[in-house]
Image (cartoon, rainbow, N blue to C red; front, side, top):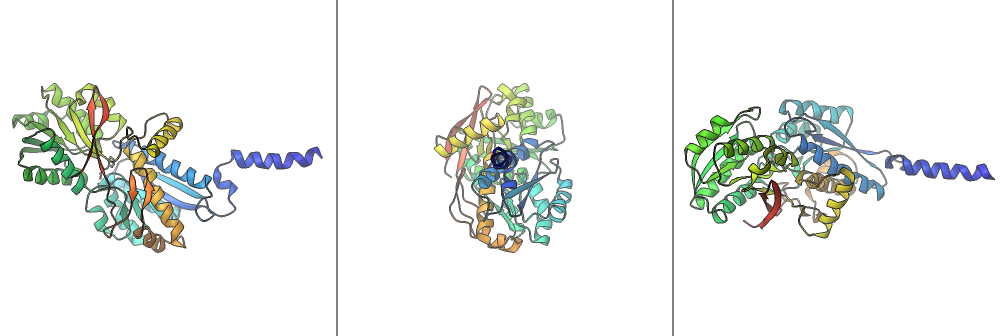
Length: 377
Ligand code: PHE
């Protein structure tokens, strides 16, 4: 009698303690995550991984996809373009994933596309904004806006809100994202009557920016435009402030990382950047996510965490509608994605495999970010 009671209690406990996949009879659906977990853009991949993990846990708690659990397999490309293809081959050949989420940095997503296309494995990037990314293959999708929209917003904010007239642009010379965002900014800023007085560039492995900053400030700009990623940006802003520049600095989503404030601190006051979401948005869905994320990971989610979560929602939705878990079927389902209610907005995939989304302008004061404005181009 006693023993008979214990067995079901033990198995109920085991189901409760074990990872969610063990309560499913069916095989898991494996989804890859190509991420920069280490290296100069480490927070990009760490954040997307947290967002994706939360989305997968929620999906599995709600029954998985058509009765099968989702299993996320993450590989680290170390923020290195040369590592991307190996990581893709591991996910596709060894782990046999049916689709891949990633990367964040546009150059790394571009490097992942040949393997995705060849093997007919859909690739959904949470945050790569370079317009070329989704033009490079019909298996490539994104859940964010492009730099045509983002570059227009940076130029519009600079001209209309900061009243800037003379911009100096500092570009990461090896980043497809930075190069193109600088180009679009220039084009849009000049349409609004501004002038780009000088353009200089750096390598992301540089550790000293004095030469570039001196050259840029020599052209007497009233705005510094920094289109790269947070590690370099934090150090460039520090260098510019030490050289006596007190004017505004502006850039794009590549600024978004808690590490930016650790590097730049108070030097970042009077800086602005465009982003995909703000944790200060009163939208109850966002506030609920921020709370859950904070209690799980001990920090406020950045845009990559939110976009990782959203990219996973879009992919799960497509896999559920695809009928079969084959690359071509999932691709076709992704192409007809409509009104997925995600954190960064409602997501519909258009003919170019892009999503139309809103832009948030973040300001920095006392070394801390705040929601400056919801921007309309
Ligand atoms: N948009 C950047 C790129 O294309 C990556 C990025 C996305 C950075 C989201 C921060 C937030 O390279």
